[in-house]
Length: 148
View 1 (cartoon, rainbow, N blue to C red):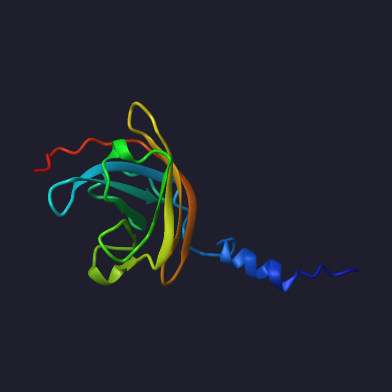
View 2: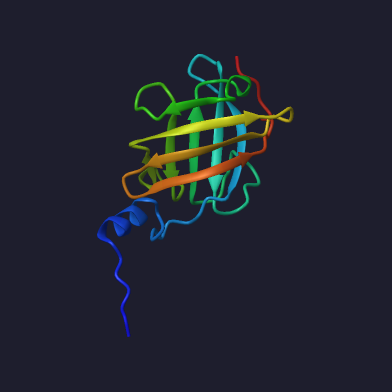
């Protein structure tokens, strides 16, 4: 009987892509507006394993992505995750402060925003304990508050 050998390079690539990662798949998404530091509109995209009933109380675990732009300015653009006032992302496993990991690097790509403001795109984010790479289709949920 012949045994199958896996190339070390292939094994490392599979690990890097999360094929053997125990982190949950984040198949559900929703988007909404937040208020930025000077009350400008900011777009928030949530990605979660379970359905998201409210973007203001998403289930755990989830990824929260914040882009310092209004939804009307997103289509066809890519943002690099930075530690300054630009876009940011967090992997949140629970409600406590020590249950949040800020993204170390990565990017968010928005391919389209339709007339109902559904945002489609992809994320590739590296956190201290995991990497999240996924496409998303996030329906827009209008918040109950105004900025400014």
